[in-house]
Length: 322
Image (cartoon, rainbow, N blue to C red):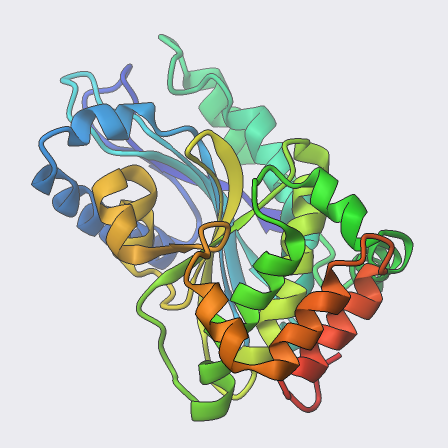
């Protein structure tokens, strides 16, 4: 069972509120968010950006970790208007991290959904005591290792074509451009054994909330094999960027720079690689015949996603990929 906890600030309270059985978890997340809040005032418009932040679903998952952390972050403040987020979260035990990470958005979707139901309106409430009590009493029976998650993803890959996924995504970019950009960016990680990436990737999601976890798992299905040789800790955010739903993937665990960049547009330009802005890709194609061949194949709308994934893995020469 996964017990929910919360901490942060609420307008109805003069100081921090918190309830969590895992005090170390609260300390770690508190320190992480404190770093983010300390970095924000560099921008003169930081309060406007912070207050405009929509609630974020987040998770920390590791390719060699036995524990995943997932929850929701919402912009908030205390009674004196001192800004600090309100966070609701849970810790999930993982038996097989390598199998879990690609399907983690699907596995964690019930937790995100339940947290959304319980936490929605807490920040705006003048009397949040009852809602906080409900959060502190909630226990969820999650099944992170259930084979049904991988089966659902595989069924999606088999039943949907490139054109169908393209139509689902909230992006002006084509799916073949996104896949090529993703492979080109991650290929050095596989070939060089780089243990840390300084920038985070931003990938488009569907506007339909019910489809977002499935498509996020599709992206992680493509990303995870590149990282298997190193103990990467991934930070995942289901967020809104430029009014479009996205999956932001950081490779440094609880690094404050990713969340800072999701809040502050100025920091975003330095820290985020937005894959649907891939004008840099054309010169790569001119110099790489296998990439041009892959590009031609991926432009077939009826090509199944399963076949597209196989071609993707073959083109970027990562042996042992699914």
